Length: 176
View 1: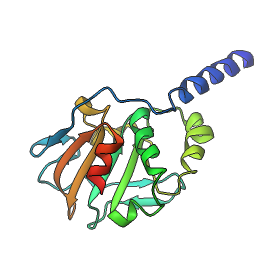
View 2: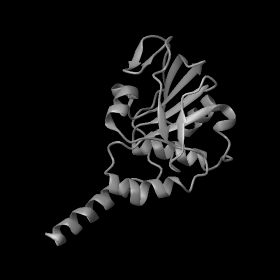
View 3: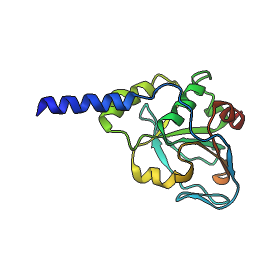
View 4: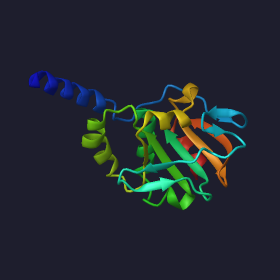
């Protein structure tokens, strides 16, 4: 039984760590939404659903009036695009732009998150807010665009628009 458990754990680790390179996202076109409901907690023209998430260092962050942009990554490849882009920036790059980066790790086995993913994220000195609960992820994910990076533009917590991008170049254009 112990041997089977060890083999299962090893397979999970290999599968969890595969794909950590710079993978391309399937979508090619940018999508911008300027009206309507994007997800359960995101409707353009209305206040964004409030949140408090812990980052990779276990520090809590909440939506603030001053927040201008939020970057969501719901898949491993999109998270890697954002993290690769951020690795070339100063640690205060996001905070100086009143921007949060939120990564959904709710589908990741907790042992993999604790042993590998979070320690890897701690190497980046900028905060990565983590969605650890699938119910929280449902509030924000747009199922039609979950393989793209979602960028929300805010004005005093009111959603102005939502863009979906798939490249570091497009990400840079939206943040800078």
